[in-house]
Image (cartoon, rainbow, N blue to C red; front, side):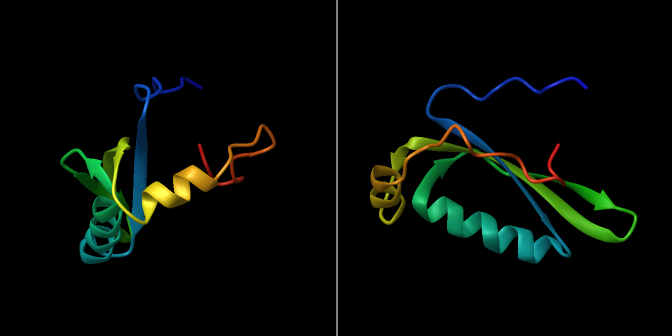
Length: 86
């Protein structure tokens, strides 16, 4: 399996999968209120309909409440991907 390149330092790639484009856009809007982001890109999510939305967040340019959450959170080496993640 080939891996996608990692985002640059201070950025995070986010993928949202939802039943409808409207739900995906609502989730993206909440993230944009906390982080600066790129323009979202959307794709079909499968035969059942659904939408997959991708955006890049700039974690260095945050607003509240993301700033306080990032300051108090700690990364752990024990964090594992879920079984359904690629």
